[in-house]
Image (cartoon, rainbow, N blue to C red):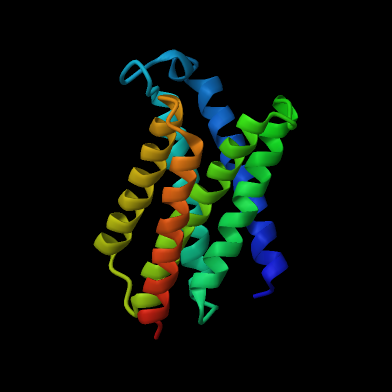
Length: 179
């Protein structure tokens, strides 16, 4: 599958997630204002669930026709993040340095969670539903943790540095475990 097509699928996945999130907030308007805690709302939990589910589903589908799914997962995550950042820039001042580091973190978290899925699909010949659910939960947890750190105003340089380290670790794991 062409890299441009995979990148475009990432963009389409973002738009699909946005449409689904919008439909759910129309059907259940209380979602936007309900909170699990002071910082984490039900909508955020649902938005992360939708985003990660769509990325995992697309990568699962792509993994059936591509031998090296790891690089495809990075491209798909990049397309997803690029579209999400573009939508955020439309709503904010793009020349704010603080927002730049937030956008970088947003880019990195989508690449990292996609990398997790790519590593799983690279290492598994026969996919088991429990394994797919476990890797989904891990991706969901990291995305939720990232959003939580953003909400409590963690230093973006520290947060982004941690994500870069995790992406490099994912890269080395994929290199050691390719079929």
